[in-house]
Length: 361
Image (cartoon, rainbow, N blue to C red):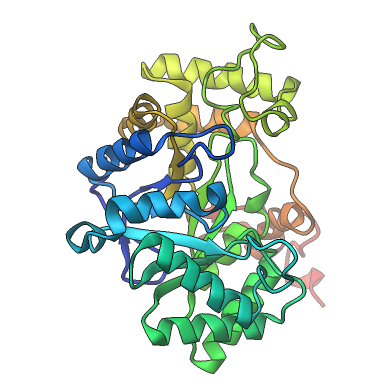
């Protein structure tokens, strides 16, 4: 597979590359990240390889990430129109102003205009609500989305880091009122964060949202730099984000990842990314890179095809504890299928089922 094997995003006609370039690391304003020159080189390499999907947010490096993209791509129509630029709103960049952030109409309209200015473009291809704003009715936000789409300033809309029940409510509001639908869901998803499989991913598949995972390497924990052998010795670049995940369960998973990587003659990071990319419902996985070397290494995951026994080993080593009723419903076929196979799922006869007509009331 390669970056130019495009896929449609959710229930839409928008074609995106199987990997999306995350731009959270663009700019060194916060003391880490990539310089402007390196960020431009990373974008160029990604586009040269066939990638066409770039994801940023108004909050990333205080808006500098958007400006870097705008300076390099947005101001040049021949470049800009070939790229799917996604950005997010909700973060407040104006201390003291309660309407400087959030998902209310006043806020989201102003944030959109700010992003358009920094990106130096007349439209945003995919506009995300960065997370749920519990203080704003979802009807107000969805109507704001609709107005932005109708005005031509936004092409498609998506939602990130929001409970499944609220996303479903938003999608139903849009459907029944004839407004622009959500086409994508952005959530944290990796071998170390699989709880989204309980509610969020099934919801997305049912309602036509393409899943776009962020942090597929769990803040670098699954990059291959951390091992059981160097436990406590390897400095975590992301601080607590990574350190909180370095425990026995993680090292057991890393043992399996190292074994699979050796069998595949590839890297731990590529195996971890290949696993996420192949999950049901996943459309385009967000990968970040602070150097060209990191980008090239991550893109190599497109060449990795995991074998069934390798997938099984990774699944077992990373099996999550899901909220009720997700795990309960995994046993539902026993009650329903009568001992036969339905849509490829087999289950034994329910032990309490009548054995003959005489036992049935």
